[in-house]
Image (cartoon, rainbow, N blue to C red; front, side, top):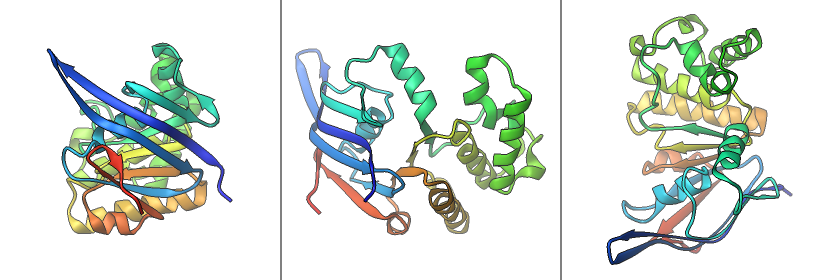
Length: 227
């Protein structure tokens, strides 16, 4: 039986614009087991992006409880949340968000090097190892602006792994890739999931991507749809 990695209980998120309040998440209950690869699907406006931001500790819920590794995150300060996020979570975005004037190696190492204020020899070694793992050891000193779209996304995956996260949140990781490159990226994510027991939650509109996951979580009008 898989151990629960992340637990969300009755998550509610509302946004206020003047006198008008819009409830986007309407009581989300979610259990993400350790070592699974899960897909998150939902139409535009369903609350999918908001939920991903809350699970990634980038946004606080209006109400509800969030637990990661049996640690309640509800009352943590912003600084503590930031530290916890950096230690336990990794992110892969649709637009990769690489620093164009940094090398592939520097981009991979950045989440770990930034808090220390420098790139240590140990971090350089780990970044090179991760680039090798994603098939880009020969591009380590290329600027991000010199890489193809598929190469940039593989650098982004390596960057997400630099702090050895327990959970990687991927937001449309194949959204800007052609079909063949998207397949390569998904195969890479699945390999990392199986060999490292890294948990993935992948937000995607692509049914081919979702079909490669262990389970599909569907969100409709701010609620998790029954399976």
